[in-house]
Image (cartoon, rainbow, N blue to C red; front, side, top):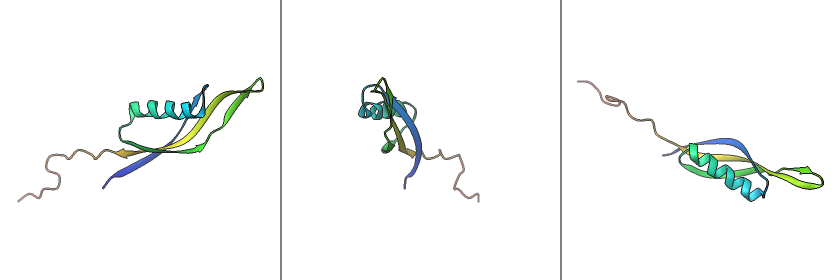
Length: 79
């Protein structure tokens, strides 16, 4: 059985929404192991001089939580 955790993050790129998603995945993967999926909540943009300035993605990242290491004696009954 796996325990999964989900966190909401926001990332941005000046190139595209797809690039912003990849930036988020690459950066998130540097600090969290077991990344399993992402769900895009929204993809807003900022506008400057009548052009898209920044592409942003707000996403839910889901990853597997590592099992806690067993301590010596855990689960064993003393006789």
